[in-house]
Length: 625
Image 1: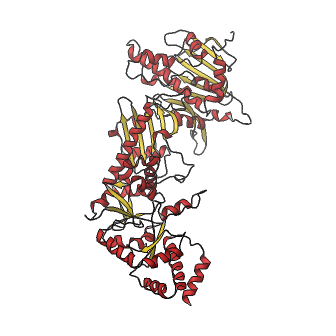
Image 2: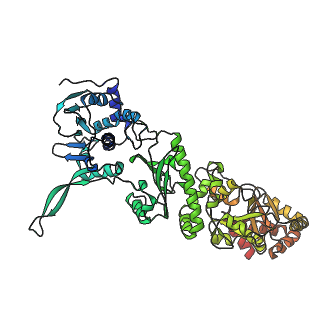
Image 3: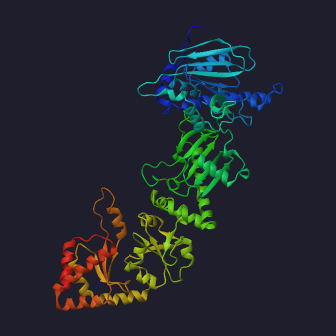
């Protein structure tokens, strides 16, 4: 039979197919199985619409046969088959899809779901095969034909013998090379794994001859090997089942089977949407983060299926970063795929699905917090920091969506509380939501800056994560109540106390000005404290940048020395202050020593490094003498 050449620019396209379009060679099996499923869909549709055709559902299947000796992988389907002309048209012109034409002709019919659209997937077989042979017998035809090709050089078509309607594709698997091991595509375990990964939910059974062992008849210890035909794929995906048919155990088992995590999920979300765009999804909120969750190496994303065929392992566009902990999958028939069916075109449907999913997750977390607080707090210990990053990122554009999901340890409750819970028990005269930032709740409780706020009966939220203060700056307020740090220069105290403070400042103005001169370049101001009750001294911040933020920013690689505007506050009711007044009036050298000591003590209380530890040590020794 004379060899025929591929039409148009098909030779160049075939070379592109083999070397560029597909990133993983294993994809070839997904493409061939999807094409086989399309062919069976056509046959099934014809049987449904032609009353003269008798059939059983068991008649429709895809079978894979491996032959290591002859290095062949054969895929057989019981689909509609192809005539000689269809073999020439569909396989001789790359990117002409019979499935697409069939879909257009039957657009008005319900239940027609054709996976293949582009007619290029078949040629992915040449990534793993030297020779591709297609034997096909079309429905209604008495003749069978064989299409055969060794790649870009062309193909031949001739008659062949085939008893049943359908198509057989025989791949002559390439020999191993230094760079590639093609033997894997002749191994039973590998082929089963590829089917489970990409085609587990194809609606027709995918069967294989599987080698098993059994005891020999009449023997108690001797085994014999035999082949049996087994169905590899699950066929009906869990997300296509009615929610009422499924139990929590079913969802947990699916989580385990998909290897989403080694923990037990705290919550599952089963979504079925029909309308302008249709999709199904199974989403999971895990209990524990994976080991690499808070690293750059972590990849977010949901598995993406198109009509039950896996398209992407991790579609990042389906989840915002702040919900990157969510596991699961999305399956839709309405997606626009690119030519290799590996990547998704960024279209309107994808954005709508992502927006809908984000809303569902947010709502589910709010319900979990309200109805199962202990479970929510377990989740929050693992992923609360990610929610806070969500508030901070993108200039606070997601703050409103996330603010009611945030929790912080409370000075009053000694446990996690929400903003709404804090607001509900605020005294009438309280104007702000007060917070204190530090390394831990224990350290914050010992901060001198908290004394006045606590004395007035106001609750303080403890910010112990690096991101907390940055996130709150983006949130700015909650239910019209602004946020105020206990280290802020102005705590928002009432006018009477402000007047008393002013009198105190005026009385000791000369002393504070002198101390400020001694500390020029180190602090912005020295003043009488409005907040200290028992401690002698503390630092406060006078600008937008807090002292805690300064510490965090200076730990970042490549950051310049960042300094917050600080004020040194002195407790004028403390006995140390009397020593300052005496020294100011009688011994300026001693006042200089006291000032430097108090400055360094304030730094140590704040957890900041002092400039000269040796000098500080000498100053302490001077006091002891």
